[in-house]
Amino acid sequence: MLRSLIFIFAMALSACGGGDRDGAGFAPPTGNTHCGVSVGTLRITGNVTSVHDGDTITVGGESIRLASIDAPELDQAYGPSSRTHLAGMVLGQSVTVTYAQKDLYGRVVGTVFKPDCSRVNWNQVASGAAWYYEAYQCEIDIRQRQAYAAAHASARTAKKGLWSTTAVAPWVHRNGVEAKVPASCPNGDGASN
Image 1 (cartoon, rainbow, N blue to C red):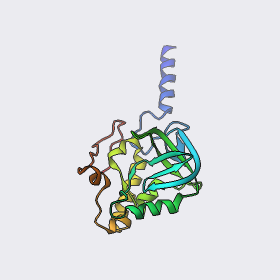
Image 2: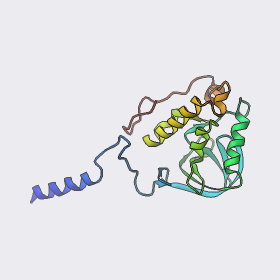
Image 3: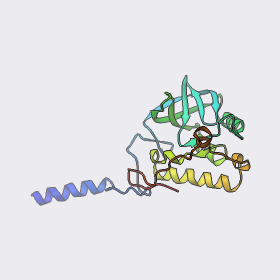
Image 4: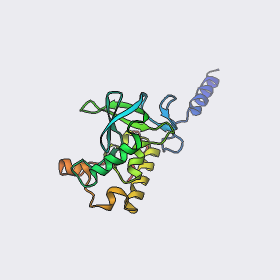
């Protein structure tokens, strides 16, 4: 009887996925996806009422910092163009923001989706309007890291947007130092380089 119970328990655990964390088979818990993307469980839906710069918008009175990216500051080369690109995508339009946290300034740090499920954050990187902010890569799953890294590399190679200028990363512009990029992530699925 005990042997049967252990077998049933082992089978039930293996049906849960058994720790495959390489990204290929990882599925976040139900309720933590939006448009097929692993995201935070909190949501804000509404019209974008303002675009501060290339990575900060206002939705429903909340200041939203676009997660996983960093756009040039407004006083940097391509800063105003990054803001214009973001405004063209979302200003006055309905979006859904998914998030799990706020930053030190009280801004929601989230992923912004248009009604057609296009990811605004990723689009900023793919178009060369922002950097993929690898210093925070452990906050997203490996599939997203790979997608952001590929978009970043493609925009850079094609010299799109900010890559057509002498690009200085915003964190270097602000602090004078490179951001520390983790070599691996605590959830065991590695970090992209």
